[in-house]
Length: 401
Image (tube, rainbow, N blue to C red; front, side):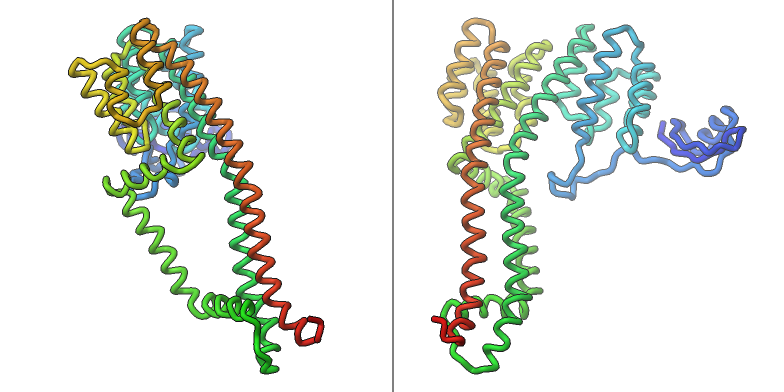
């Protein structure tokens, strides 16, 4: 089955737009005619598009839509609404590709396929964590509870991601403004002011000659500088896509002051939430660690989880396996050890996630507090140096200095 979008007219000549699921365009037209519509146009709507060639930040994962879908589906199922009717109700609230995905899922479920299996056909929208939790919930007959846990996790994960992103927004804006202002001064203001001084033949101070050289480079070789910047970005992206390059970048990131600790703790929060959510849903620890690896972006931590999984599968204690990796802080190792001994690992991991979540928030605030004055000071020094180097020869020419 596929999703077809259409434009048509009702009996009262009112224009209507919408989507319909069918095997072929002809079948879609037949369905619309059976509804009493006069068809103007029918075309196939692609539910998902392969975006693997794009950098990850550019790909759209429909994260917010997935959170809303999972939460609303859990609510509707909990009050006794049938699965197909619940998906239909939720689909009416969405548009675009996600709406098409929900229609395809609804069609697959109506044909007898499980919800998890239908979601597995759209990996660009639903990650492995979603699919596994839904699958476990369907097998145990506790789908509503599993969906509620999944929604809780997704909402917490989204808040954590937004908190870190928000902390970096202002410093990035200041840095971008500094670059734009500097380029404007060097390419428009400085050449016009120094043109008269060059015609007078007076010797220019050293600071002015430095600024003039940079200005000439920007004006005469802007295409080469732009090409070099693009090549550097593409080269860094290509290196980051190789295992060795990704490992070096992730390892360097973890060693950075403040930012490294924030990235490490953010990853640990996500790992703890994933493992806790999966184990509460009935997934074994080894399988939960496998899924947590796929949700961990940092390659150093991912390989550490892989080593831990193999060690636990071979019979080692969880805490010993984590300690042998040399990546996780002592507090994390102690929490896993206490949770394993007491049989309350899920509860312990929830507490660990809450504690580290607060620490990430504190670190994000601290990072912002440090970066803001540093960037503002750097911007002031840069603009001030350009202004000083530009006006100093003018003042000298007027015998002010």
